[in-house]
Length: 211
Image 1: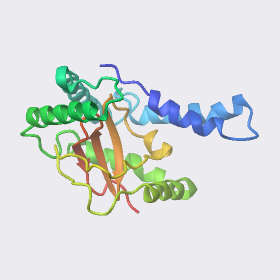
Image 2 (image 1 turned 135 degrees about the horizontal axis):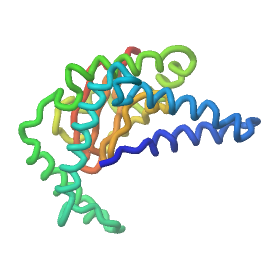
Image 3 (image 1 turned 135 degrees about the vertical axis):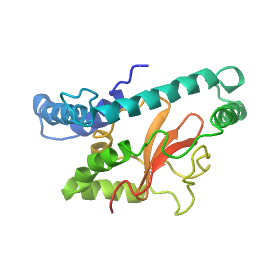
Image 4 (image 1 turned 180 degrees about the horizontal axis):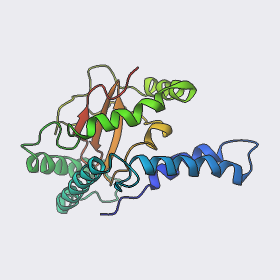
């Protein structure tokens, strides 16, 4: 599966287009610079990125998970367009049960391995400094779920009724892009890898950021 950076572009484009008083060419310059910097940091090319091997391994793992999810999200578990909330819930519950069964032996660190965890911490650390860092921390605080409500347990269901924290654009742009249905979420100081289709915790990094 090809992994695109469409989400990165979309998030940052909103920021760029909202800058009053800037013409189009001026607004695009920092966007392109940020995207190129992010691509270098997460590249799987060893000539570009010293962490290329770790990035390639992480990409391989998340793409394999996405393929698993795709195989399981069929039949009664297919997410079909409907206005019937009951049918939507039934399909998601079926999908959740299938993924949990398929990954019954899943363990912490299968995606965020010992090799990749320090790389993610290094990527996130500079983005939490200065004014941009203060703004990012404010966003994380505003969107935070209730303390202790989110289980840091692989294959556990993300709790119903709890908010999914927004990942600030400057943090999102510096992390490796993910194939659907995987998304990053930050809860407190911890980074979650979520399957948003099945509402499951796939993996996590404790103390990924400093507050």
